[in-house]
Amino acid sequence: MIFWNPSVEAFSVGPFSVRWYGLCWCIGLALSYMTAYYLYKKQKIAEDKFEPLFLYCFVGIIVGARLGHCLFYEPAYFLAHPLEIVLPMKQDSAGFWRFTGFAGLASHGGTLGLMVALWLYVRKTKINLMRVLDNIGIATPIAACFIRIGNLMNSEIVGKFTQSDYGFVFVHNGDLLPRHPAQVYEALAYLLIFFIGIALYRRLPQKVGTGYFFGWCLASIFAFRFIVEFCKEVQEPWEVQMQQFIGLDQGQLLSIPFLLLGAYCMAGGKWCRKLGEQA
Image (cartoon, rainbow, N blue to C red):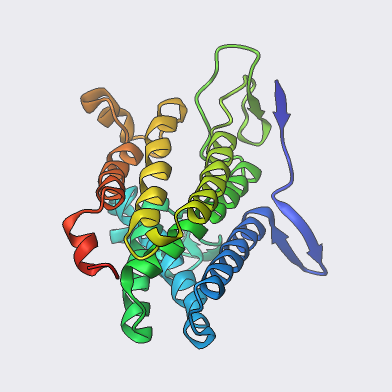
């Protein structure tokens, strides 16, 4: 049993503080960036075509993740308070605005946002779409790993009670009993998926440009996401009724299309062949 109660702040400089969650996001994106740079260099893609990649990915992930949370998990609230979608602030009952940061980012929305951003990036750079998706598919899991570490430092997206002495007691949330450290499960799984992806790339470099590695990323991440949800608490109260009705929560429901798309790409589906370099 681990009593988990870290400070949400990594460090402070004068009046400014840096939170673990934001720091983990930055570390994850930086490692993904370096991995993608290595892959581009290995594949002899011109550096000037790599330079805009980070900006497209960063904006796509953040915007997609934010919209995904607002529309997938709390649509009624955010459609009634649209400014809170784009502003890192919240309006209290007295009508005053207070800074909260963007409390709510959804991985499914981030994935969709990234895919749209990469489509725009491909239109600008004229690099083959499937090659770009494959390279990003290899690099992305390490960012997902650090994002889940950030969730752990925030004591959020927690697991269910273990009914034993095993687990994390999330003191910050007022818990007295241990829960499954679901964030740790996901972080370790995504780290393993990242290293497997690198190993597959070294073994099958000819597969870049076919959609295979993009498919591996989607299928493996969202298959694990589907499984781990069984030991996680729901993020929104209304998901309890969903679980009772269909046996799945919103995260699992949203994972299914990505899992199927990943399997389709790994199998070399018709559209992958059509859009790939080996068409």
